[in-house]
Length: 360
Image (tube, rainbow, N blue to C red; front, side):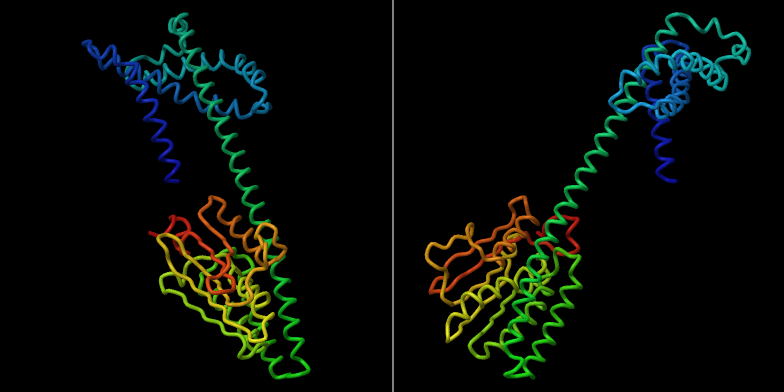
C-alpha cells in the first residue's frame, strides 16, 4: 500500500512538473497564475488519460516484435483519445476555476488545428514512453530469466560434483571398515559409528554449497577417527586453525578429500606411516587452507591438469565453480622436506556477510 501511494505521488509530481515547465515562458506576465493553472490543467488532464492509453496498449494482442501492428492500432485509437483529452482538460479547468461546465456541450471552439496537432504529438510521445517502458520490462524479465537459468545450472553442476565425491568417499570408508570386521569387530563397530556420524553430517549439509569451517572440521574429525583406528600409531593428524577463520565459509566437503588423498597416496604406501597437517589462517581478505603430508611425494612428471585423481580434480572444479571471478586459488606442489602440500585460498566471508560483501 505504501509503495502504491508513493507511485501515485511520483506520477502527480511528474505531470505537475511538466505543467510548471511549459508555463515558465508566461510566468512573467501579470496573469501568471492563470497561465500556470491553465498549463497544469492541460498536463493533469494528460495524467488522467495516460492510464487509459496504457490499458489499451496492454490489451493489444500483439507481441513485442510486432511494433508495426501496435503502431497501426494506436493510429486508430489516438484520434478518439485525443478528443477525450480535450473533454478531460475542460473538466480539470472547471475545477481550477478557469472555465464553465457549458464548454462541455460546445467543445468545438477548443478544438483548433494547432491544439489538435500538439495534443496528437503528445499522445505519440506518451506512446513512445510506453514502448520504451515495455521493452525495458521485457529485457529485464529476459535478463532475470537468464540469471536464474545460469544460477540453476551452476547449482546443478555443483551438486553433480558433490555426487561424484560423496560415493567415492563412502566406498573408501566401507573398504576400510571391512578390513577390520574379522580381525577386530569392536574397532569395526566404532568405525561404523563414526561413519554414521559422517553420513548424518553429510545429509544435513546436502543443500549447502558452503558451510562454516568449524562444521567442515567436525566432519573431518569423524573421518580422521576412522583412519586412525585403521593405521593406529602410523598415522598422525595435526589440525591448526586460527580463531578468526574458524567460522569462515568454505565449500562443503572440501578438506576431507584432501586429507583422504594425502593418506591414500602419501601415507599408505609407507610402512612407517607419517603425518598429515591441516592449517587454516587469514591472509588479508583471504582464508588460506593447507593440507600437507610428509609422505612419498608426487610422482615424477605429475601435473594437476592431467591428474586422474578424483578427489583433487573435483575439489579444484568445485572451487572454480563457486568463485568464477578469480578470487580463489587451488594449487598442489611438492612439500619442502618431502611429501606434498595442497593450498586453497578463498575469499574470507562469514554467513552474515553473504549479502554484504567480503570481510574487512
